Length: 147
Image (cartoon, rainbow, N blue to C red; front, side, top):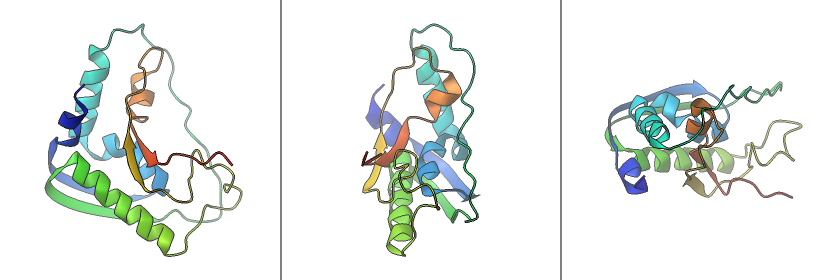
């Protein structure tokens, strides 16, 4: 895949309104933007690989803290512009003094306390269910500090 084609993909309308932890803002971009999901699913289907079985159980986190509310509404923007805006909102959230939920401080892989921005990566599709793969393409950068 030409990564630039994905980043330059123009989205006619983006409407994101969700309560979720900032690291999820990136991984769930295909859920918020149908054009991104279609692009990634077409790439996945074009790859030669044995069919994968199952799906990801996802993460289950319990806390008494509420995740931040994200509002992002835009028209005629590229995927890269959306990712840059998410990074800006993420860093503003961190700069406001927010920190990981209690008990999550050491889990920097799923919840980094600080991200410089976003990263696009194309993991191998072999043996990975499409829905899991689609949610692994965008992530925070750096993803983890592995203390």
